[in-house]
Image 1 (tube, rainbow, N blue to C red):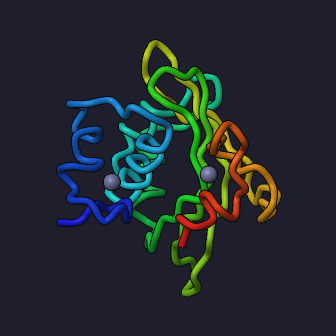
Image 2: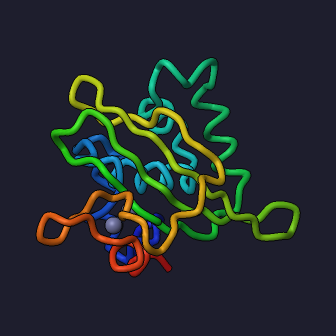
Length: 160
Ligand SMILES: [Zn+2]
Ligand SMILES: [Zn+2]
């Protein structure tokens, strides 16, 4: 079975080990993907436990489960991602599609992640972030011969 996060990878080699708790996501991108899968599956406890305590407020696992189950999830596209296992913070910009009242809605968010006691957590996000221009330095931070890569030559090629 292909993973719920649209990675085109088998579920057991993608988000499943994180959702089962046998592994911790090594990067903000891996956490982001696993949280999308958790919404699809309605895994409220996982969503709550990967939400930064400073920003999750009074949210409960039950509410998150309800959001997941009551939504028809249609797709996830990653725009760019930053943050490796050793960083303190990272970002993932994505578009998540779902159906609402019969029409397809796209949630476009730039999410911030923070590593707390060795575990990546979702912190907060900016909805409808400013558009990335083709000629600007790619926000993923990639370089080529120590020059920042332009977005159009970098992550713009990956997103679909
Ligand atoms: Zn996955
Ligand atoms: Zn890039």
